[in-house]
Every structure is written in structure tokens, then in C-alpha cells.
Length: 179
Image (tube, rainbow, N blue to C red; front, side, top):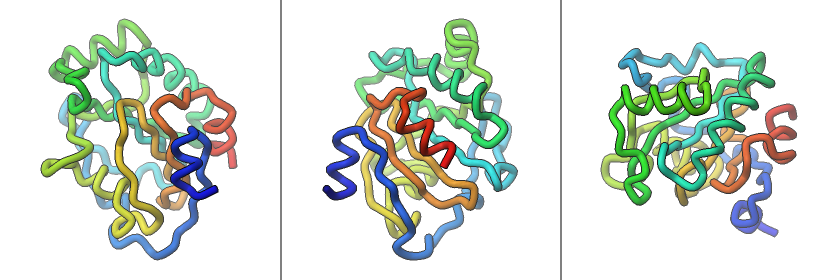
């Protein structure tokens, strides 16, 4: 079974570098909902779970699981939620509305970025890195829907990709975070 077969089944594809990434993930800039620059290098030595999120999606309740995972694993895991409005316009809110929604409904304390594009001509550089083998050194992928998850290991390499339907507290994600 190939990595794409595993991905489509929601299994954890164990990925390993096929080539050295052309871009260091720690050199990519992100901004929080408050407009502060996120220096990803501060997370060296920790795993990072990148998740494109949306407030009005059938998968939005995953915020609860993401928060639980963050609270349970935050000593060695950073979660970064990246709001995106590219899938059926399910994240229409501005920064203040997104922050309020996440705080009031799910008590989110992990990092949330400004709204970004995860695909297309205006794809944010973080997703160009996550989805293009020429940048990440591992695999080409595409973001299928809201709440797709990309796990980066402690050294800044792509470790695993999880389908949008894989819940944050699943055995697959817990095992990958702790491996």
C-alpha cells in the first residue's frame, strides 16, 4: 500500500526524507490573528501540527480535540491553526470574529494565524512547503478540505499527513506525536 493509499484511508503515512528540503520550514513567516509575527524557529526541538481550520464546517468540533491534544502534549508539541475560507466559504469571519469564536466555543489557547490561502495562485508559503515535495523533500500532496493536518518533527521535517476526518485525539495522531 503506497503513501497515497494510506492517506486516503486516514492512516498515518510514515514519511521519510527522500531528498533534503530546498526550503527550511523555520524560515517561513506566519502572523497571528493579532498581526504578530510567528518565528517558527522558536519551536525547534518540538513537533508542530499545522491544521487549516474553519469556524462553520462540519469538522469544526475538532477544535475541541485540538485543544485537548495541545493541553496534553504541549511540552513537546505546538499546534498552529491556520484559518482558511477556500472550502465552501466556511471561514468568513475577520480576525476578531475568529478569535472570539474559538475562545468562546472551544477555549482555544494554541496558536491561530491570520486567514490564509492553502491552495491556488495565492497559496501561503507554509502550504507551498507542506504540499510540495520540491520544498519539503518528502511528498507532494494537496489540501482536500478543512482540518487536514500536517505533522512536522522536532528537526523541521515533514513526518506525517492526516486526513481532515482524522480526529485530533486519534490513536494515529497520538502515536505520531509521541514517536
